[in-house]
Length: 430
Image (cartoon, rainbow, N blue to C red; front, side, top):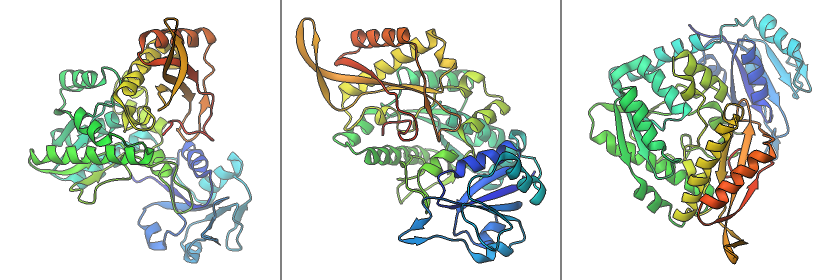
């Protein structure tokens, strides 16, 4: 079932996602596109019922204000301008309009149907996947996280045994995570799962690399290389499934928005990539991915699992990765998760984790001076991962976490709590 769409054209606004989410909450599908989209490209999107020109503080690029193709005003659909008043637009606003005004434009002016829901989305994606893949096979990186699990369920629904899942242990997983993935997917769900232990390969490539972007690209590039190697052992592999979601694409930058960070499933892919990508979740926000997983019948425990970045603990062991700090991150993270579960915070807090910086501080252990690392605890709440607030954890809980980390984790003499919201901070440190 083709869903009506409102196209949001990015003319430098920092609140494109706010508008997109408001429209989706009405039950109407929306997408964000660059300002220089052509009329033909717009028509190729199918079922576009209206256009919103969303201007803002980043509208000036290389000293000149960006604008749209004037032909879009005559494309046959209503146009609304936000912070970008033009003579051609009947609807002009200097700020994001109130909900009833936006609803009037979308539902009355554009006559868009409220047919955006997960059941329809899944039906559309299953049809698109079958059309794209045909009788070929898809190779999927199955980390066991929310995104890859939902992609796996979607692909299984669409193509069944044509899906080959690969779990790569890059040595940057949380404690016992690879073992858990094998147990759940191979032994319980009977997925066609290939397990690859590439720990030494990844850590070797990352040795001495401190730049966050370089680390992400190395990890992403090695992932693709491993998949290629596994694909050569199989017949009929032509596609690579990925759990790219909308915030990944948005944060990787647009023509009028600066890059926040590259994502391993968006940037840094090798030029000799041999696979065509299958990305059925790339237009979903995180909460929508979870809703999709529930609609697909995945267990709640899997769908609401803690988010985990593609580069794993590689972006939580700050700077150049060392084995002692990597182990400190892994062990402290396990303690944090255990204590949050005991306190009931695992069901309340959206994401919580630890990081270990690449510098030491002076301290005292066993009545002697020591020079060791610190552990930083982060716990945040968010709906769509675009903004986030800090969880106000009870002091008694923080004390238990701190005491356990200082006693049980080697090479650590200090624990700190991160009180920074997003923005200005990001959720991850790198």
